[in-house]
Image 1: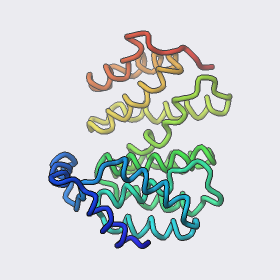
Image 2 (image 1 turned 90 degrees about the vertical axis):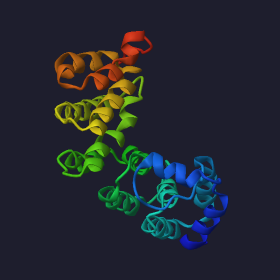
Image 3 (image 1 turned 180 degrees about the vertical axis):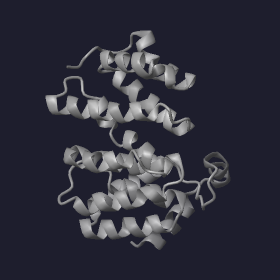
Image 4 (image 1 turned 30 degrees about the horizontal axis):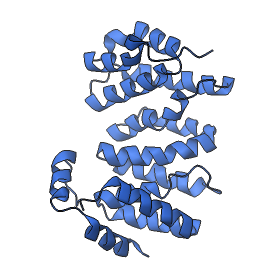
Length: 234
């Protein structure tokens, strides 16, 4: 099945009125089909099982190039898989998509695919470090969203703690950026980390919190305030 056939299939599964609703919500001018995420999840799972890796990569590129909302999300979902060997070409494709991201939903799905590739090869964080200086909002934001797996370990190894501190350094460099999406990404990273490593989040907020927007500071401390987190870390 090629990209055009998949788009036709998805268009037939769109809910009446949903496409217009999605266009209003996402506020980016492109074609929307009105297809719910569970449909895309099921389809991507089936395609990952059925297609050879080279075919899947070509299909993902073609879907992305349609610039249709659901097609771009499906393209990212084709790569959202823990074990892929070899994965160097997929990592390159994910990087090539980032400069074309212009909305949070598509950007988040690209980052979710990228998270798997970072976990597979943490040396790729050296590439991600370069994104922090990008003039492109969604690329800068991606440096935090794609590294969210390092917020989730209760018992991180020393190397993981080093990666965690490295990303916290990037977040510290972002706190003066007044863009809402950047502030939200910093808050998201800290909020998730606070569930597993409260001391690091408290230290970050003590040093940098006064430069964050109030909503971001409040969200970052959400679980610290309720005590709904475990104090882990090194």
